[in-house]
Image (tube, rainbow, N blue to C red; front, side, top):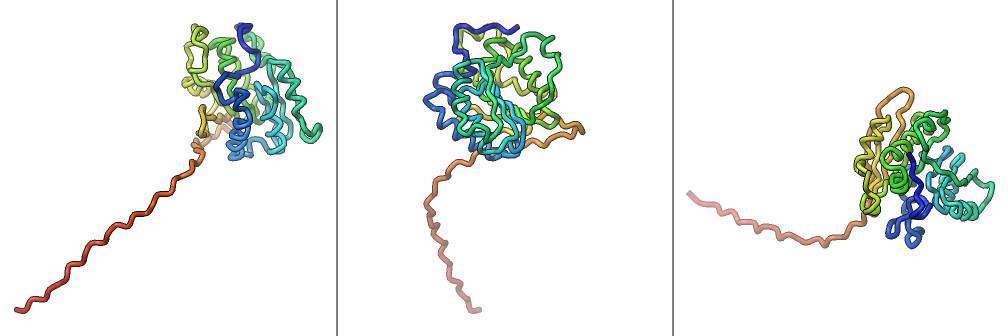
Length: 250
């Protein structure tokens, strides 16, 4: 059962001190776009859903930079949606849609309703904390299963889970599934982890693929952001002295 959270901001997953906090938002957008630039095929000519889109900056930049077919951003906070709509710089240039929506299914029956597998890529960036605290373990599992149902065969879930230390200490009660255990659950419902993008910031970004119709396993790979290397001064090692050869007369 989803428990409404009246004590916290209705915006999805914005934690003070986290990469998504307003003080860091511009740097965060640039870093995410740099990471996504390594996998442009996940967005180009694709139908994309951005869960917890906040003010829509990332959503709009993805649409313009990667030429998505359509992209839809949803968020709980109506003020965020208003700001997101105002951030559409070129209306009509790319199909971008924003709407206020609570993504979490309320019951198992609601999840079992017909969901059209309409998306090639689903973004879930730093919103797992909000889903988890509002709905508990079962509520978060319902969200993950809904993502699986809404993805086309071979589609990708781009997941950036909030680290456990960002959870309010008093509200951790009743939660037994830690972020490090998300992978095990996602794989149990059919997702395949095929890439981990480790960046200079925390947390990492995980790419999960919904198995294609032909059920061919996907080769897993790890993508690491290159770090600048310091040039080391070359030290010349002294060459050993050559010992002169003496010819002995017999």
